[in-house]
Length: 197
Image (tube, rainbow, N blue to C red; front, side):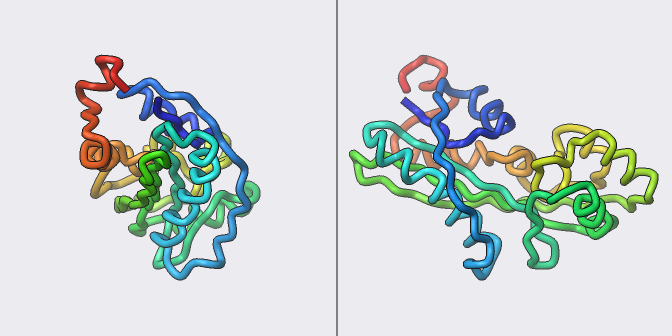
């Protein structure tokens, strides 16, 4: 049995295309100031999100993840309000930023505790006030790292991407599939579809 330790509908949709799973989550207190780099942050937060679920379900494979947007080394979290979201989008306008997703995979009855991350680059087109305010009116920015969602209206803000699109959405499934194959000899292209997981 695979457990996804995330309430994110985006992650659930991505994983659900390949395997059956159930969702179990634990609340954690996120402290972004403890870590020196965005990749350390996302790996640490993904580990914290999954470890308690894994301890309560040691015979299951537990997958957890955390995604952040970083601009010039500074992490842009979820906006506090519309004003905060507007400021983020103004800063992202006509620039390239990175999206990092840290993920952790656990199976504690086999003593597996594995953490990794993926990076994608996103270039925004030049955004004027009309575009930014129109986007904010969609309310899509709420609860989104960096104040946008690339899988929705946010796609209209993007000029180009380099790297894994699914990573930007919130779950780098291609890299995770490689890790599942290496750690458990599970092939998400066949075994999940056959109901063996």
